Length: 365
Image 1 (tube, rainbow, N blue to C red):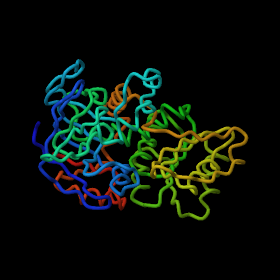
Image 2 (cartoon, rainbow, N blue to C red):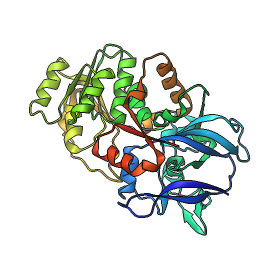
Image 3 (cartoon, one colour):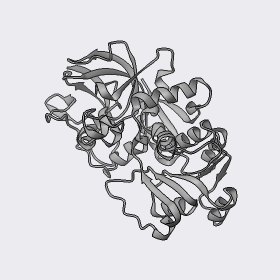
Image 4 (tube, one colour):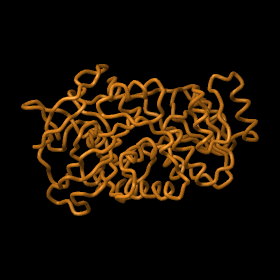
């Protein structure tokens, strides 16, 4: 076991408390990563509020980046000293994993949401008490994390490692929904509902692949302004009573594609109604275990479609390097949405994320 410092959540809706705890000994195909940076994702806030059941006490955090300190039995692709970006856990053996869709792994829930390893043990402890880890395969709100080898992506040593963690979830979700699921043609029109990190990931991807019209809808002026600097061609206030008419005007009657990062009934219906025929919408927001919505079926006629997307439906081992290559080429400036906080200020950073004051807080160690 190794001592580490971690932000431990002991009660839903309560503040985290930074404590000294221990990581468990490494098991087969596990690695120990010393964290350098970790992004805060809206899903962390959802879990902390209890809307995604996760056993307590627990350590959250799932947009980590760091350096491999040690490796367990059977690890072949990584070595101590490697720089890695962490993403979700998958079995790499089921039909969906074999087919290139690890985000839909047959064991996704057990590996990412249960708080336990498959054998019932936990990756973290505090004396005799279990501390639940493995949140999205990581629990990276800590100085060290025990991670499955399959969820770690090796990256070059010359990259700004502390900033790369959000590529493993929020940004990859938005970019992947665009590039892997919707797959717009150059010159296409796209509407993105919500200018958080996921939505701005879609904006960056749309600009990088040459979409001619990229419209962002968000209630916050600062986020709309940021979207314009990242490639949006227009940014509209979601409270505008004439929003639907303006979207149709800007897209010549309807967009080829839309991305819904909000996933409320109102927004999802607008994201579908704003499409041309045919047109496609990707809905990616996670609001909790269940989120019933009433969708106007008549909006789906004439070829409109809605697809739910988890983690961008990407394989992080190939997609994260693709995003890094775009960044190196100056075509994916994701760092412009990041605000740095020291790990000790995690509660301030969580509050900034919840209020929308900061698009993507990143904790550094």
